[in-house]
Amino acid sequence: MLFLDELPEFRKDALEVMRQPLEDGVVTITRVQGSFSYPCNIMLVASMNPCPCGYHGDRKHDCTCTPKKIQHYLSKISGPLLDRIDLHIEVPAVEYDDLDSRVKPESSASIKERVNRARQIQTERFRGSGIYSNSGLTPAMCEKYCVLSPEANSMLRAAFDSMGMSGRAYNRVLKVARTIADLGGSERIEAEHIAEAIQYRSLDRKFWA
Ligand SMILES: [Zn+2]
Image (tube, rainbow, N blue to C red):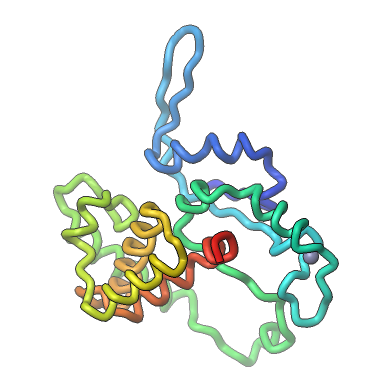
């Protein structure tokens, strides 16, 4: 796993150069002596603030950034790089109740069980196909494995049009929805799965809204 804290603080060219290895799971380094390829199938996790001061959208603090400053900050992450990140999740500031240990969230053990079941479904689905999980699906394979209900299909079409989604983001949504459906034990992708997958593209909405 590669964790990049404060993503917009990295040099833009350093971020852009990650696009190809993220896509192919292979990094190719070219030197005078020749060209070498190394495996780099990684899970990328990155974090960033909503704006330079960190308080944009916060209920208790005022953001002191101008819209232009926020735009400049967000623009350090390009659309094509975002397209290669499956899940964008906004994390609100911690509230008192979140720290109250009497409120019990779902246990890690039960989440693990659900994840293991979903992985098992994928192992069986892709046996002999050369891929191991939904993230490895090519656009052509999506057609076969990501079967949508009619409602899911029209929801995705509407989101594609209204969000100005790229073809790559569209495929991400499909694959994430496939995984959400697997977690719920559903063979077909339903509207609720698409709706949840679209929620995980919140940064696309910030850029193109
Ligand atoms: Zn701010």
